[in-house]
Length: 473
Image (cartoon, rainbow, N blue to C red; front, side, top):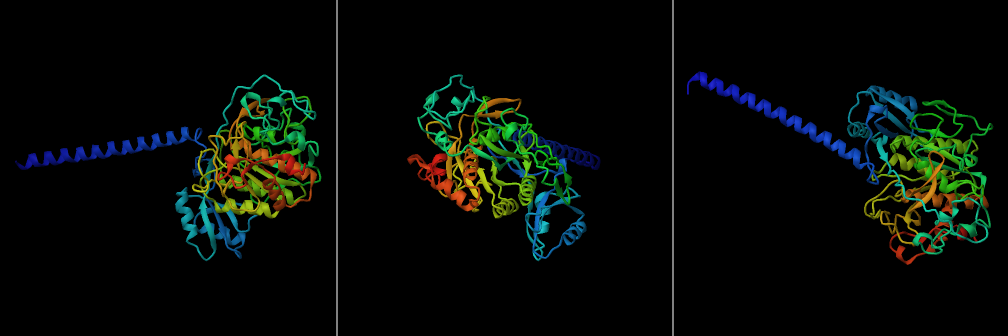
């Protein structure tokens, strides 16, 4: 082979290698895009989808808790040396801040960088994204059922099997929370505030409007050093750092109706509490996505309002992830220190939480109750997570009728619907015993269940929520 031919072959080889590399990169890009599309579509059908939050929406990348002794000024100086910014201080958890990396570095790498400061940093972790299911709609039955004296005049009450199960639609008689008997003692109190940490609440819904929390004139508007002054007349939107937590998804409105749709008003349904105050804490957006940081900011807001005289005693959390967050755990613990019960959905993956943890329901804290879902036959719902040690109680959670966007009503299923049953009963107890401690409130709920043999080895209490027994009826 002459020298000219050699150079021709070398040139051809270089072209082929280069073309192969370009094609390989294109395939990698296609795989990444396909992976992203798959993740996006799965996030609406799978119970939980968690990944580090991307900073395209301005969300900070990491949550860092500094050790005692580090002032906010010290923390800001440290962040500045890394070209980072302290986006928010979480006042209820000393030393905890949300940090925005201005270089848009990988969240895991940024967290690791702060973790290496062992002398002054307790822990650092990415600001993980949280998502929830869109509850599925079901056809609403038209039939109304007769029930004992004490039934409210709400026209769709007969469809609320969770409150009064007469065997309607193939159900099992008395497989309910015994609401009618509980209401003989109390139907709730507007002195009790339940926070719904979710997608917001439609506070204009005709069956909710009377029971929505509105900041009293005696309570100053919310002020945060980083977020500024927020006119929280209806609650708090951590996603927008604003005071308008209007629901644009529906999930939070559904949970709110279970807890406190106005009872005996001749409209729609009855909540477990006919009288109560619902405070919306919005941290999940229209698509059902939010971040750990925004959940923490919402809890921080609730603690601040409690310290300013708002009687928040329960936070309902009908969402979750498989990602452990020490920062979120610290915030929930801080809420417990302020006397706030935290009721969490156990999850909808049909899995054992003792083996595969689900958060926040798996946080082993004295103010947390984890709730599984039952159907109208007192059977654990097929989708419900369980756990003999880590799931504490079961409550109705399949085909639950409640309020929805647009002043309508809708059935939905999930442990998301079971958790507010427990939150609602907790509020009933507080209406009757305003000074009960968070520890005794939790104990009362878990010790007054109706035992169900099929729940042995599935939930720690071995039983279903019973409102009447919890009230001593």
